[in-house]
Length: 209
Image 1 (cartoon, rainbow, N blue to C red):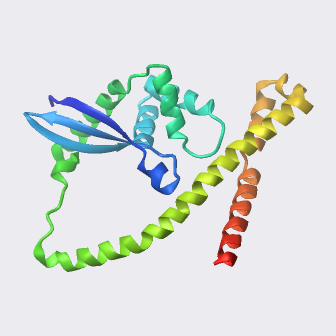
Image 2 (cartoon, rainbow, N blue to C red):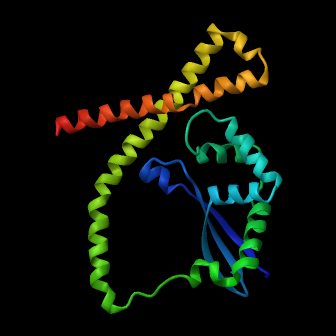
């Protein structure tokens, strides 16, 4: 299948709206003079690269491993990509070629868009109203997600620095022992502590209301 990738845009709406640092890629793909739009999650692209044993998969792993904090941290990864002039297009083309090989034109968003008939407009209005009712909840979720991420990152940095200051022998030990330290640092105990703090903040705000 012959195609041109006309544009690649980064969609960070999940970070802006929900506080979740997960990026998707919005592509404009031209085929025989017609332009199709398609969203590809970076997580899906990353998984694909690792499943196929592509060098990009190892590169993504390496970049993420050098970023402190829980969660995807896609925005910070893309900051590194820009700094290192990493070109996403080859792995994107490999992914798109695989999609065409497996599903032909069916996977393209343009061919998946459903037409809304007049009979469906009433139910569509109901869905819209429900969505609007959820917007306030989403804004609240974004507030707490962003602060949870910031608290996690700051705690990890602080604990890492203090352990390095007080127990430098850990970092001069074997790679296996250093991995054990990282497992403790990024373990469920730390995540559980942060989640409890966020829970207390939510309770405090509920009391004020």
